[in-house]
Length: 228
Length: 88
Image 1 (cartoon, one colour):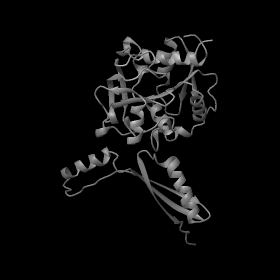
Image 2 (image 1 turned 180 degrees about the vertical axis):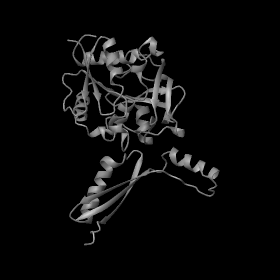
Image 3 (image 1 turned 90 degrees about the vertical axis):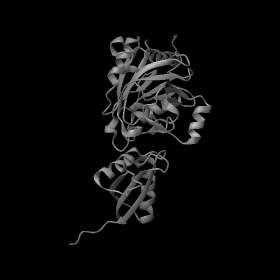
Image 4 (image 1 turned 45 degrees about the vertical axis):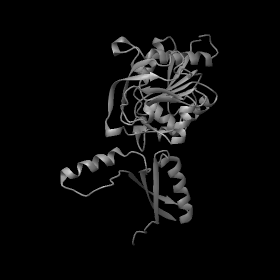
């Protein structure tokens, strides 16, 4: 059986089809799971896609955190399953306390939309295992609230445990320590503001997202007990 | 008892407030001099049924912590009063 990725859709999610497209392009199966589902089915990996879950009302991710599917995502993560939150998905993961810190409005109140250069800082995670440390990837961002912040203790922990996976080469949003993406202690839950799923085809201007999405599928395959 | 509740959510000290800063920068151009320390938050109002004021306060504190604020970046201030009974 092919590796299967559950792509979470809340009311207001708008990047789920881009993720499905890339997962299929890379030879795996994708299934969209609506937020009111209490179960992920037989998924080997989970992607929380970008958009505006529940309209971003109150705060991005604040209401999504209470959607029934998030309990299933939390227990999947707890059991070691690979979970990636992209953009709004990253915001949801921080609100759900599956990742530390918070994402606040961009410095200068600028909505940022365009390609950014990301430096891969660590290859030990479900999203970076096939990348090399120091790789510079061209990946688009598209956000208003992507300014990563956390307490100084949390920042020291992220740095000390090599949990900063990506840094912006040129900081677009004011994120502390140029952070673009992080992982949890077990390195199976990853959140990032840039959109690797939008950089997987020449027609989109970059294929640099493929190495990340392939890493995720590899982790999913391992999770499913399949050979790579 | 019914209580009228107002929760004021604001950014914690030390957290950048780009909205406040932008408003503050715009004020001199409109002729408002001498305004400093602008910060932007939100207020959330609701009615709550609870046994007494301290029970109501406990519920709202829990609500603030778990949902209405993100403790990483936000604080809240709660004010609650017994709801005024409409005059007959």
